[in-house]
Length: 332
Image (cartoon, rainbow, N blue to C red; front, side, top):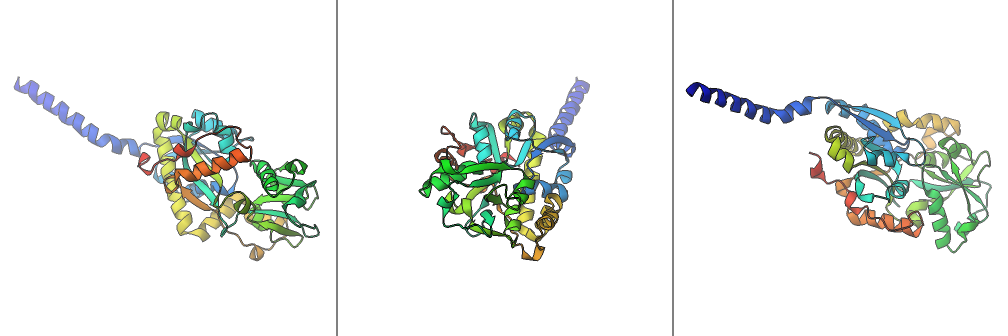
């Protein structure tokens, strides 16, 4: 009997040790995760995390894949096909996710403000511009991965113009840079970094600095980084480690803006873009948008943004994303 009790004690002790050590063992085990991204400055935390080794230190091997067109990354993250996505235009995210808004978890958003504008309405220096109603009958280009076509019609309508007389034309990133010079469009809605680069060209002029910040909302939520409940439930380890790495990256951007800009230049080829449009780096006033972690936001800010989208007919019915903000304690 004593021998049996001794064996039981040893087994219980072994089980206790395993229970205590298991979280440590689990944390040391490398896991894999898939990340989708839009090649946009709003995805910068992803590249900072990669460059600074945050994924490596958290032992998560990430497969970084550029997202396809039409916001398909939203559906893939919702279904758990990818563990997270970064750089998706906020309006595109809401538009695509409106079928099931409570399926997502927002990790961070990028914001533009009146003091730090990230959007501009640009045209040729020779174009005569009075006010927003000048856009009637004109071709307005916008980056195809955004819903800025709906925003400009909303803005023109609020300015007393006829939005149906504004012709909006989707542009690739290359076309955003070349469209005005080639006279394929009359005006261009540009975002960072293209907005700041084009603004330095002597052939162009900014007619509305802070276009979306001034005429939609301030601050203006530009883009979003997010995961989903499916990922939190079925792929908790890679998902949580990715979130931790991104939070570290946002801290790095805040504390080291100059270094963050160097990383942005490496991954977004900002210097070569300047060369393409014959702009000198010293003439470009390059600033980054603000990156705000989910738990730094008030749910009312998300609700305000979606209410505006309803007004702009980006959303056709109400959708509540205010409960999607990931709490700090959800990832420890």
